[in-house]
Length: 456
Image (cartoon, rainbow, N blue to C red):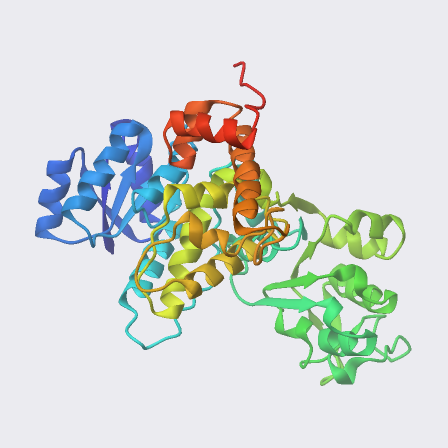
């Protein structure tokens, strides 16, 4: 088993934490203060879990530990009462931030990922397919609860959300967590095929024609071993853009899912089709159902459980940890040292609207890393080269001189940060990485209002 040093865990939570971590084949060494942690790490190097329940004191502990152990792999355990500490944890050098209650398998996966990325020994591509989900925000904690609930059921799952919100990540997470069929996960994008191609992809090229009159067919759909449905037997099939599938293809798919049986064309015999269906759909899917572009019988098979994925702009608490994860992954793939992010840059990343969600975030960070010179970290200026003034990424719009463009950006950026912090000048200045007096001066020169004040 892999050992981890858990620093600062409240005594009353240790039994549950140890039980949860053991599910990921992790054993725990406890430490209450810096001296105990350093003594343990001096004798044996191991990853560190730093509990943030102590708030600012825990963050100071992180900085002190990093001073003494610059290469130690460190993770943070978030206090759900303080989701704002995620940003501080990332700035303190945490490789990842885990919500309570701890998931042992997720912690083990993160340790394995970071150790593999850190080695970069040239024996692999450095890519990593993971079911990691960042869930410091209330909306994502609801998603995690829904995943846990869906994992113990056999019913179909409909994951609804904008492009780039992680619909397939959720489907894979359910698939990996379910106890009854942890085998094959097959994906089919219905929009990538025309009608005949999709029919062949799902059921097999030699199973296109139905044979209800055949003796022994019992009205079953015909399926070939060449089809993706046959590949998914015993596991999960995840379909995307199901509203783009022709009605006759939807009918055959619904029949297989209903009967849980099909006629195998290679043998002419009925076989059991134990498949769990999942589907990833966009927010317009409900209209497609209402307009009849999705068959009712197929919709019922796919939507026994519905999970709504929040867009990134509605889960800003998760952005710092997610950005940090992407940065480490990108740097590992490019075989460059991991990059640190300045407070101002991280505040900008957290404040942007991200219409393309996580996919857009990763694309931006990849462009930034590719554009960096040498081994330096990522500052605000590095991001400004790839961010539009309207909040999009890659490129600058608005026209005018560089000075005018910078002023427009600063005006919008400061306004966004002030809105995010409900008009609290001290908090906004901290997020921007400047003094309060400098923020007041900027607001006057740029004619930025203080915005809505938090009356709580």
